[in-house]
Length: 246
Length: 234
Image (cartoon, rainbow over all chains, first blue to last red; front, top):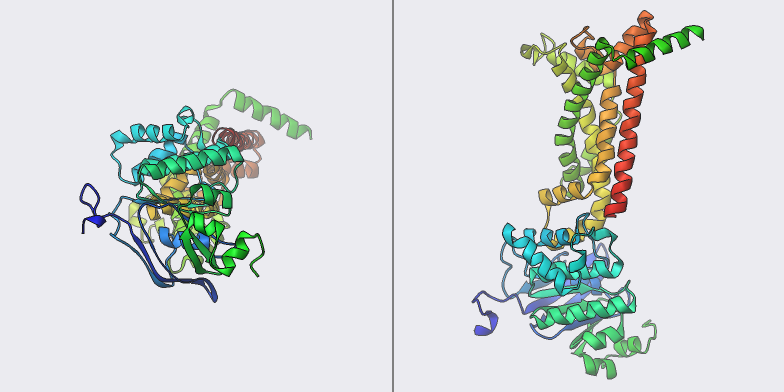
């Protein structure tokens, strides 16, 4: 069973198994019995109309929420003190520190030795083109720069899996393009991408496979090309036509 | 009116000449309140932050209690500390009643809840914004409280200064536990109260001016710190 091990012989985090996952707040059922297996490799895009449960599903996978039914199971339990999966939010939250300080903060939490913090932080900033802003206060950077900084922060952690919740929803096309490039670079460096988006063009550019959610259910799962051209489920077809699905 | 302006001019003279008696009183006041504030911060800031970021049984009751203590009457604190420290009291053997130490204790008891309640509010508001991000990065509990305290440092300066303002301008508690002993436990507020009732208006007015100036300067300082920080750190 070598497939579950990486080169260093530690068990890989992926695949991630979702087994009949349910999530409810009070009497409101948000996720209804989703079962899926997320493998290393393909970039997974989660699509669906507002209120379909996309962001909630992402948070369940990341561990920010506990399912009220079913299981979210990683191939290996996480090593203590070392986050091997990370998340980028729609609106990044930056601390009142320098850009570099925000990256080294995350590294310190991940247990990186003190003498490596700055070097690894600067390297991560370089990959997103923010090395010139290393000493600038993070919160006064522009929205696009802050989102790139958020990506640098997770890049520095070299996660096996990265969840992204509509990372370009508030950004202009130029910044969106930059973010997409960084996401592809991260993926090329070996990080599994699981991303929620509303933007069909983005799904097309970044997605290898699509998980389509509708009213808390996994309505369809298909390769991105096929899904965007010939969706099989009626809900997905309506969604792609831009029809309101109710 | 004439009497007042005369007293006022004399008061200004006392301040400008740095009258030794006046200086001694001011220095003692500041020293007591500073130590009380240091203690209040050491306990109040972490306490407020921990209550803000953690969920535990009885949390709501603690918050209500803490907010209630914001309005804690200083004379009641003075009375309680007096009873604790008096000869017959449980801590009477310490023999510190009518000393500056007793005054520090009274002021610290008075302002620790103030600092804790106000910082809890500030941290709780920020926690709404930070919670998911910090949890995602693996920060919880004590670590999150510390991170937030540091991130909100400029807002917290205002709270700390509010605490200092309350301590230095408070009269009831220090009067009761300090005893207003000349040269030992006489601070600005108790001196003003005493000298006014004795009719020595210049000293009372001079101290009043200094007290007012201290409070104003502190507030201006807090305002400037916050504004500068806002521009630099966002």
